[in-house]
Image 1 (cartoon, rainbow, N blue to C red):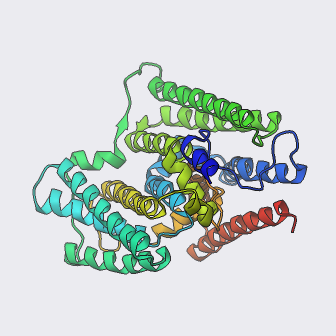
Image 2 (cartoon, one colour; image 1 turned 90 degrees about the vertical axis):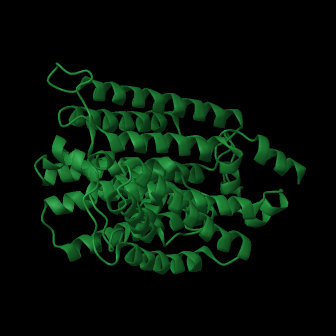
Image 3 (cartoon, rainbow, N blue to C red; image 1 turned 60 degrees about the horizontal axis):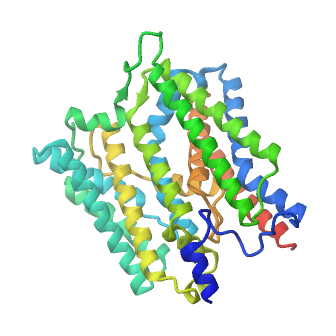
Length: 414
């Protein structure tokens, strides 16, 4: 017992692996291939989907304006996916985030528009409400013991009703100009004079270098602790694919309107939560709870406290998404956020999170969210009817979960 406790408090700066994960050098080839597919398959699928829609739309999907629109349109879904993947890793689900997006946006509008307060006060009010909502739901899940599915289902109805009450069942707009820049503002001209925004390209280069260094350090740490790692060719291929995608994105943004403010916000959140999930005691405890609840309890993990803060964090990120969405919409609507929870859940599962918990990454959820965004945007550009778009998105989610179940059965030898 003490040994497991030491692992949780002093373990390596990587998420705990399954108890069935083989050691380096003695790995079952089938299991190693399964892990490679889980970690790298989503990147390959993303590149293939991007290439497919580029071909079908004669390059329109890769135009600078369209890429910028994808980032602006799906940024709030990616923010939600960061919190949702942590919830799912711990073995829970949150069905209320769409309603929380609507309520926090309504609060920001009520403060900034009706109340006449500065725009930043509206943002702080929205974030504060999100934290309170997270604490409310975390209390019922962690300390009362009601399953998260039921608590958040009730929250979905409760917070939607409060949204109608706050807005008096009518839309409220417009926000102050500074508020709308959160989701629609751009940083450009800092390194201009080249016919494109060189600053955006520089940020892209720094992002690629940072990602490559992070991956190398993670690989070295896994080898040091005798954990399974990807084959070197696959490891290099993944980094190259990510570098190509990031630099292609930076190039297109540099030739459009520059670096979106919301992309900077999203990058900060991704970096921060990647560190939290990979390199902190709290992050390892989240994986431990989702991987084996009984073992986590026996190891001394304060499960109630961890679960409570998981939902507080989800409330905060849902409020952040509410600010971004209301900023992009330049107003608050009673029906805002409808089905956002489904998009966030889909992003997490398509990005490699396991249905049973214990597995998933922030990076994977981001790629999963972008994959959903690219598919939705591509189908819109092709003019597919709405019903067909919904059918295809549902099938993509189903196949992603089926792939996860298949991997587990193969890894377990069943």
